[in-house]
Length: 510
Image (tube, rainbow, N blue to C red):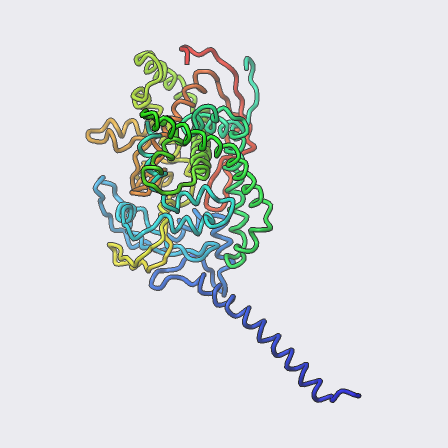
């Protein structure tokens, strides 16, 4: 029987129509989502778009390539006249910069002039955790360490704040290959204690996880946010950090179980045990609060923070000191004098190393880890002192370019001055304001306010100990000025840069 032609056509049309409707049902919400995700916040100037651009793609690429440049240009664009205002620190700001917004890969971010840093530093409605959840993929397997930050971080913060702050001839070396190892070994003793701090597998995991988790984050960030929940399953970078987490659990969890058993046995015998490392401290606090806590993920987070930040700071400081050899002999004299006076290493002795502290802060000022700090998400609408309304759900941050470029630092602001902060500390009433660990609106190296890095005191001690050993045991020499490589909104020393070193006889036993 020959099919009825009109019926066949009608059926085919009906199927095609259904298919088209299905495609539209999928594509239209996607388009709407992408448009809404990129939509600027109302009432705040948008910077970074150029005339003739109908989408935000090119603006995103420009911000990805050089966030600092974009924010500087935006700040200049919105400056208001030539009025001069004076802050509590008697710092003259040439203009009152209005907030504006830029577009990064995840949508708009409001950029606040550093003069707002003190104003927003402790605002409870501005959440650092919520910003981190979006930026560092805390809901994805493998990113377990960052999840510790955004979950119930009371245990982690309590432990960090209360407990942790307690060759003959010239040879070539890549600092990028040794400073992570130095930071890992210095940290492992406090974080894990014996015997795990000597475990080579753990040291390897902690170093590699630190490097690989940021690689995975950058790779994920390169995809549209709508695709990330699906695409992450197929990315080799994500598989790599998931393997690191599994290996870390294999090493640490048996030790945690053994310690819990020993603690319970001691309690049964009427004895009280005292924890001496982060594993024990975290387990004790979690037990006291009667809540579950992922100790392995917390250990990975401690390692990421210590190795990533400390190794960068240590590397940059060695470059700066080697390029300014006049400070090295002075630093050696200071270190030797303190160790002789104290009869060895003491925490109070590290505080006495004030020239070293000043050199560390100056190096951090010139080698800023990120184009912006104080990243927040507004959980409720707030209004700034200049009348700008920050809508609920908005993401915002404070740029850091005033650290190396601010007029606050005088005509030689781009030159390394190891005594800059020592001289400031010697001014009346300024002793504590300019320490390496002190945060301020002018120096955001550790952030500012209630979300400032809680481990900065521990990091300061680590760096001082490491530098003391390196300067007393080795001479260093640069082969050429070390370049810096921009990665997104971060600035990192060139990992392939090679410098020279040779052994020397230390004047004192370390």
